[in-house]
Image 1 (cartoon, rainbow, N blue to C red):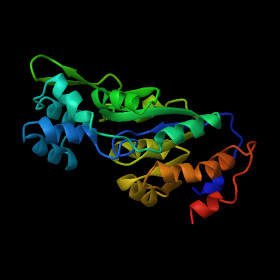
Image 2 (image 1 turned 90 degrees about the vertical axis):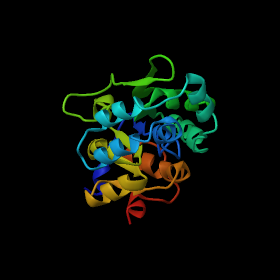
Image 3 (image 1 turned 30 degrees about the vertical axis):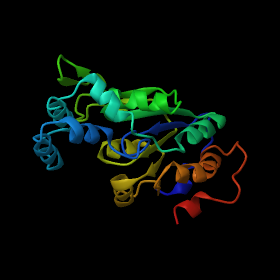
Length: 237
């Protein structure tokens, strides 16, 4: 599929944003595990990487190994900052009339306060990390889907979005990347999109996404003013 195949008039775009490694430069779940979990969490991670267990099984077992109070978690997360260009991207996308949401296989305990600290009010679909007494936690998955091994099924979360642009970075985005009309891809997602010949642009930050946003909008919505000079053919060269 080439970029030129995306030429169609649309009434609305929807941007689905991954959180860990995308909106947030680091993986906040790994950060909490490295900070507070019993060392066995790494063995569980290896089993997931080897394909022996699903993402949901991996996350549930790892969260059960965290030993931290709610105050400890809040204090640790308070030192993390998001990609500084995310607010500008959200404002620019909304100026074009686009919807923007967060779809993540990470946890509310990280995502919600960090978005709020950055002044971002966005719909969020993610997993929950629930305190269960003392310094113990449990993972809760209310956004899964039968047949999907992720805690949050990103395809189900964006079902019905016909003109979908994904901004993501890793394995949890692979399935949705196949369904999206276009992908801004970081990390291993960029390699996956290239291998699968999916329409995408490799980016390193939201500054790159912002730079190419006018070209994307003018290509996917020709009724809007054309961008100044950059074409989709240029992006995919």
